[in-house]
Length: 234
Image (cartoon, rainbow, N blue to C red):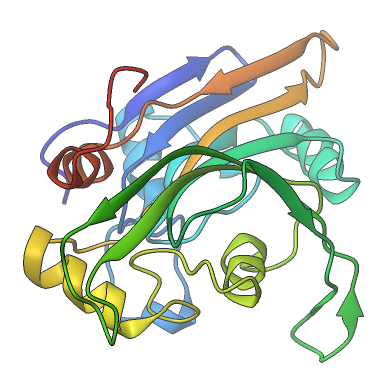
């Protein structure tokens, strides 16, 4: 159980958004049957109100997670996600030096093996080189990326950056084990450095454009500080 309440970023009579901690499941899942603590359960108990997640983010991803407070709001917002009408930005620490900006539109297979359109834009915010040997290289390079997925495929950011060979640090499924191991041993990393920074959508009843922004979680900030990245804007 979390020791502190979930951080609420936005709330009205229809919707509530939290800054989900890293390593917290959104809801029950057969792939983590041994877990008993979930964002849905914690928020429901914190508000003493029925809640439903409008979308999903990975267990190890922190950041903006939107919940509906009524079934009507839930249906409307989920339709926006299905129609790719919501805008999302993420922050991630990745291996190597990224170009200043770029995109990839390589299709990705869904769980049935069918290729689906997938588009991810990104820009490089900071770069750093560490005097730490990883694999056969005497030094290691990393980039802090701001990422804007235009489609919503499963693990889209993680899979696209793996295809680009700019693996996300801490990604045990699609990442690079030697860099993950170095961050665990040198810096005490115990999660994936992917953060859902902003979410923009149309309010289901007022039709107002809403943008919600989540500050970086402590784990992410501590790693950036330890490797010497500039934290002034975070």
